[in-house]
Image (cartoon, rainbow, N blue to C red; front, side, top):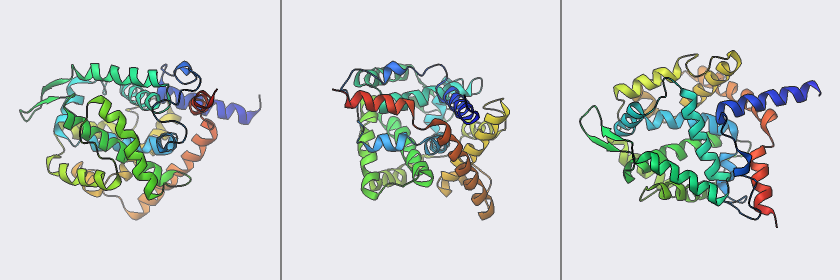
Length: 297
């Protein structure tokens, strides 16, 4: 095997291990023939969720933004093991987004049902005394909006060709399906509706002690992975994700102010890493299998 092929293979193996762990089952994507899944090859969801640099940085931004909702953060703090096994949460989130985007219809629906069952047990009382329930439609809407807005922001900054305004609206309209099947209501379906929702919910957002602790954990070198190369890559992606946040969110989370020079350097580092990730992981084996499945017959 040629040296460059070995390099590509190593990059792909590292990325898949970090994102999917042992959970990447190709049979979820390559059958049955002719099944487009929930969205299909012509969807904008396939475009956005297939861009690794945008999804990595957008995923970090989503975690940070979601933490600003005190009830959502209470659920994470009290019911997850992110401190003991931060990669596990990344694996589960990445796996869910991947299978609902590219998996067969049956596999996507099964993944949604599994998450609904988990949500049935995630409830409690936040430190401010308010009860929370992960199955609350309003809370589900917030988590979805923070996630999709962040994914789109990552795509628009780091994809080879940003989406047009119409495509951006289509993205929110398409992926709203997953939020609704999880139990969310009144899900925003356009850029304008997402922005309106963020404005409406902003008075409810605040950096709780749990949120600030999670941010400190995320920004601590070596807290996510011990491998030196992956640790460096994660630091680049975390900085890129923090850079995607709206200024008010970064200020609320007490993130360090970024000088123009630092911002330029961070974005250049993400773009350099993006080139390596694309070299190692494109064409995506998941998308290739899903496309062949959808177009078969």
